[in-house]
Length: 229
Image 1 (tube, rainbow, N blue to C red):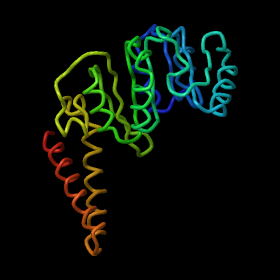
Image 2: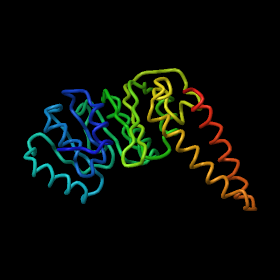
Image 3: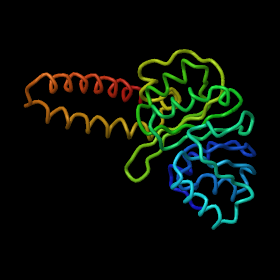
């Protein structure tokens, strides 16, 4: 199984030999890769929708991995029993959904050792939730795949100091490392935000004024982060 850059980076964060619960597995590509390469012996591929789960099962069968990958219809972690998985993967879903999944299955979450998360939106809210609820960052990566940027993180249970505003928006690990992909993202993001700001300059009304103020705040954050490089 050949993975996209995004999925390969996610699979690369998995600890060898761990039992995996892949939440929102979609096509099942990460579980197939982990089983096929021998990195993981036991994988549970989970999805809330029957359609994606059927597609995943079809791919699993094509690779002859039915004995090593179990598919399970599940809303988040609700279909997982305590102690069944060492590692949870939640990639490609909204940040609000990631938080909801962790909150709604706190008893199961308490028994999982590692969490590999790649939220598609509201990542600052995800980082804030994790920081305030006993999750500690182990590793953070960011990749660019077909023109899009994907930050991802690996966490364990544990306390750590409160994140700064810049760390919430851009990642404590990425900023500490001066990650080159983050630097590229900051440059691109400043250009994108400035273009939006210029288009709003001629617009009147409270909505346009509010948006301009939001963009000004975004530009300040971006420039502060870029100044660290």
